[in-house]
Length: 161
Image 1 (tube, rainbow, N blue to C red):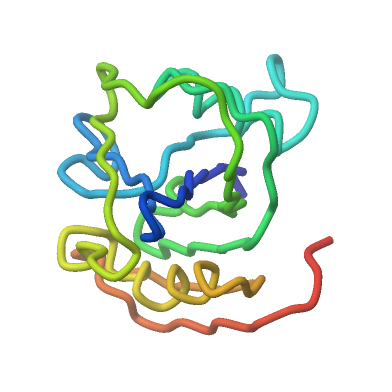
Image 2: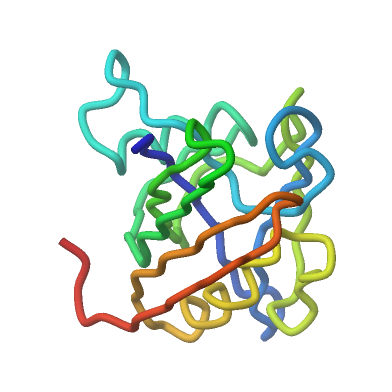
């Protein structure tokens, strides 16, 4: 399966916790809010965390300093097998630079209490609140035609190997 990354920046802003999401402007996921990330590149990346750092810099011009892996999400698309992928999810609370718009993504800060789940992938509501509460998890999603979740399983874990 294809290996991919998602990275979410989290900050405290005047006593309120905020999450950076980015509107996908083109390609797979266009028109949806999401974390930033992309595919593991065997020529550029020595490991999956390096891919997350590289993709974050490419997509929103931010250099991540510290990164923590919090989830592995496996997506199965039986009707479009080339879309199937393992997504390694990271959070960062330490980076350099201000998020900037790129050709691919338009970043925006959201209060963790006002996440626009209705404008995101339908699976996000099953796992994103868990990682924002400090949990680590592994999840499996089977996606049917029309990008509808056919089945899902989310398991809280103590560590990710």
